[in-house]
Length: 171
Image (tube, rainbow, N blue to C red):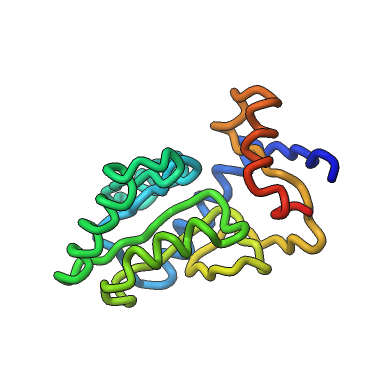
């Protein structure tokens, strides 16, 4: 398997994605109590979406694999949803669905109506579904590895290492 095509997402394209998510959220007439950025890729989009919508933002980090910053925080968020609060989880891409399904599984005891998901790019072949998306791709046709503006400062080796964690996403 060769290396992926690294495709930059420009800042203008990213801002258009944030605008699309903000408009979709407003059109749905569902207003969460909090946005929750999923680290690492969802933190920047969640921050921008927070500013675009005026919604407060929280965060969790599954990428570092440290329970105190991932699973423990998700358990606390599940308790908040159980008391009636609503959360919109934000990530950069729903690719394989692994991250979104991990969050959804961690919140399984919470009422499903209190949790929704938003992404900049949604793969229609993903094992997970989302409620809001700025763009849709089909991984059967689009094999590119998207490089978001906050990732553009990373070295090529670092980007390829991230891709290499699950290369079958673009196979």
